[in-house]
Image (cartoon, rainbow, N blue to C red; front, side):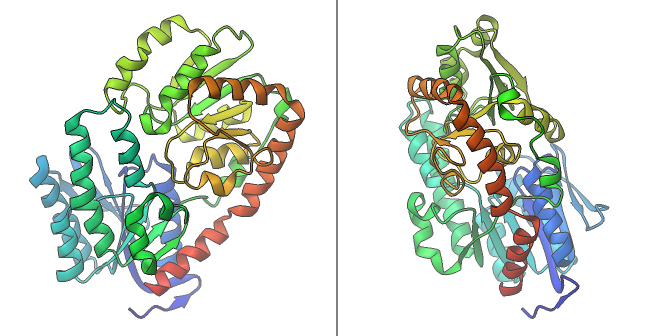
Length: 391
């Protein structure tokens, strides 16, 4: 593909972005979209609700509206119709941002329509399956579905993609499949936005904040949601501590997690554990600026936006060394590392770090400085420019 660069735009590249989740509520989708709008001659994005898929152009005007068909066959039909629109709009590249496409649609895009496929991998699916299968909380049908998705869809997508984009090279250690395709992988980020560091910045000295400990994320086993809840329960007698659970908590994964934790009982009995629920991303910054600690006891991660956002706000992070977290947190410098995921250990580490005032101040200052140096809109833009130029 011949590519020309003029005024920071690649005039010969048209890209269709298909994100997962397929909504602009997800900040990473907005960030990638901003990069593409600058770098591409024409950029399109596919957004879905329960009934329709909408294709938006660069100016966010809807170009097409597709009524979605239900069921497994329906998903294939929907994907084919999206590709039909892409072909009509003379799209050169289909960017699957954490989105899995069925093999038939991928073959159509790659072989028949001659589209280039970019696959952005945001998590280690093999590691997630491995951890889920040993948890004892997932049903056989749930695990079987994960296996089939991995073998029949994920593997096929890795195979057919022209370029595989990772958030960290550490995925080679947890995703054996990627080791065979190093020749077509690179590292890029879906963060930050152009205004990220203007919005995410410290406003209060960490020592002037109340003892508020946050968990930000979904109610998933792999995220260590149950670890945080149980650790908070162990510290329920600590009257000066408040725990905030921010994110969707009514839909647990697996479903048995709700019963295992008895969340309704937790809400009634433990007054210092507050379930904030899902909030607009614009409101998140106020919670982070007022929190003294963000805890993320995940079993597997990619590049969690909550960690980057907390560090930018000068909020110390206590997290497990998984995924790209290892690239960001240097223990007792830019954050604090959890060596295990047991609730007892996590609760002890929370108390210990909250008692070390000097350490909290050091982490708050160094973490905010580090992310501003490590990430920038210009750096991310340059990486994506190189990817689009070389594909």
